Image 1 (cartoon, rainbow, N blue to C red):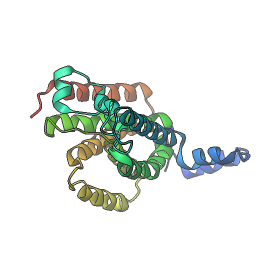
Image 2 (image 1 turned 180 degrees about the vertical axis):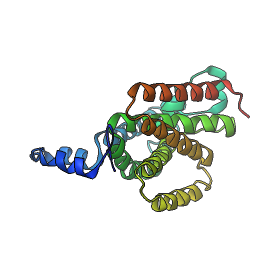
Image 3 (image 1 turned 90 degrees about the vertical axis):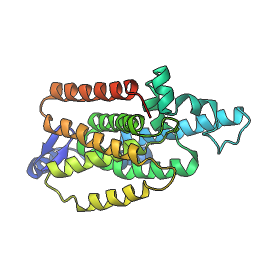
Length: 249
């Protein structure tokens, strides 16, 4: 079976469908990039880069170096701080933090991972379902940080969502009966890297599990859109309630 935006298709169906479609005319570099890497993946990268620029300019306005973008009013207003979220109820930080990065190196590594992993899952699930996995995974990773990380930690980065994409990709591979060996090796390497100081193993694991659960809902209910929406909505509500209501520490 071959994954498609509305579920999975047999190879014969795909070949027959392709035979009836006219070859696309050249549309320039942007169209080629969208075709190769995925429209949503490129849009997510653009948003992350744009947020880095905004925080860098905010740091400059505050009298700090642009490279120290994390030392800025905008970054402070959008990053995740578990104790602060519980005290103020500013739940949107659970998502906005996933679009912030601590410097250029942090941004660069995450965007490269997003480009490689995201494009694969976008082709498999389709744009809407892929974006759903990304955003819910970011929320799941943030919820894990709220529940299990130190209350005074300052968390940010797209890696929670990216680990969720890996979890989602694992579900797709299982559903299409493909080998998990390469993905498992990649996960093990990245989980070991997550043990380095400054990285959030808790957030990564939270994103990974949430991504797998979200993708599982979408794949199992792929022929029942209403059930997909209900399942994902229930998951989101549970995550938000846990993240905002459960005391940290």
